[in-house]
Length: 316
Ligand code: NA7
Image (cartoon, rainbow, N blue to C red; front, side):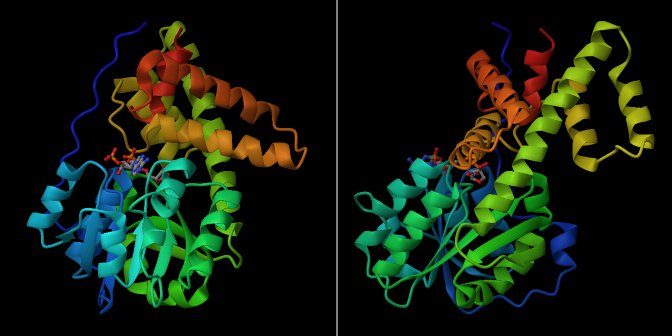
């Protein structure tokens, strides 16, 4: 078992507003926005929303993560139900489909509250079926539902440079515009519930397969004792270059796996992709192997590290 470096503790600096955000002329909505889940993405998005003057009510399963937000002016609630009662539009950004469903259907969950005149926005990366189930639960309780999938890293979230993919209730999409303008550079409304999940998972397939290709290529260079920095400097000059792959390659070269996107989430996304493909009898052999590679890297102890930690496995 290799030595596993513990990722840096996540710190929330509430005092700074990124240059990119400061340059935007954002007029915050008068509505109150609830936020369930203050992980890497959730905390970064909420910080952006507070910085741009939005009224925010938050809840997180581990309550201690709420403290910096309370100090920054957010209202902190004890349960998801309390957040729904206090907000007009409630965003949710948690780990996976199971966590998303627990929050909506579970004890003290969203459906315990009166959803009349409320809207629920599911932001966690989930599969289309889960999103449909949540949509039915919310709309049957007289709430409005919007599926929003966010594409980008923690740094892109901090800079307000995410890409937003949305599907479902268009009126909710319109009411969230000042939030989207805060966190994203592009926003797409893709129609029905499920469409945004499909597009997001397709993009994650490209990312996952590319990361494994990059890590294996760099591991081979390492075996030849060719400097990874030299490889990346040349890669940067080619037409294959991509900002993200360069950044990930540099993290691999440095062994710096501080999580931008946890490896466990990348593997979860690939699992969801393969399940969608299974339902369609769509063959995805390379994605299947990519999923196995990420699964093995998780077993080596790198779940909470960045997806670039897949390099550790490739070096064996
Ligand atoms: P993180 O940083 O791993 O954070 C996950 C969040 O989900 C965190 O707030 C967790 O609470 C929360 N969580 C996990 N399981 C549950 C359950 N069962 N109930 C309630 N809350 C839960 O993820 P990211 O922010 O990077 O990503 C979030 C999503 O965006 C994910 O779908 C990605 O694929 C994209 P905790 O703090 O552990 O108590």
